Image (cartoon, rainbow, N blue to C red; front, top):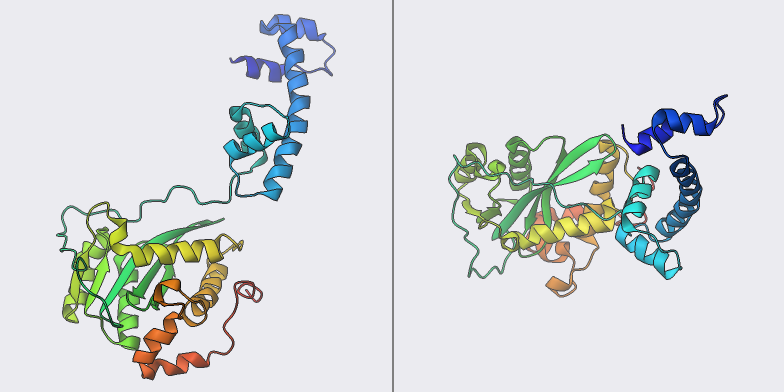
Length: 300
């Protein structure tokens, strides 16, 4: 039994003297009183930690330890970490990414076709990927397809599994709505190297492209889209259910396509480029006023 566990057995309200309880447990009485004083100090320190976290919720235990030092409160970072866990506090910044790109060695990987390729038109290249989003009830997965040249999101789906069928469903719906691309680029995850994905691309006469190993920059358009979605929407709103998240993403991606300007395309909106090339999609512009980020969750 550890010293901490022994101290937890001592009751100051017992009829037995503290000294006698310590003797029976083989514990020094001074260590018990030290723990009592530490508990009182922890309460004051926890209040200070909570004040800092409320002001800067993106601070982790190391930055909070530094801020405490700036306020002349010198404390070990391990103690700050322990108290933050006790209070259920943590930085709102995302944790290291869960690997959604698990390769299947039994499936062949196609060459990366975008190296040296000049991409100058809509539907020349699409890119796809999967990312995870954490909800109180568990993890959900976002599948998306983006037009490489215009940054226009041509399709997306939220699902509670990473099955390839979801990626195929997004692709088929996008092709029905916007026509087929010349190339679709993806990472080497099993969803995009498996038979279901490859067969549907080949059936449409679409060239298959896969990123190189460890080359996230090969699919940079998708990485940038995930960054925008998470920092401009997901981390700003506390969606509690998959339904709420889906409605929020729907509003955000309308904003992303129709209103948000991108410096990479000369401050134009993705719809300015993509829908100009495909006038048959013009009715999409009649959705009314596109929401700002603050509007997104008002009716969710």
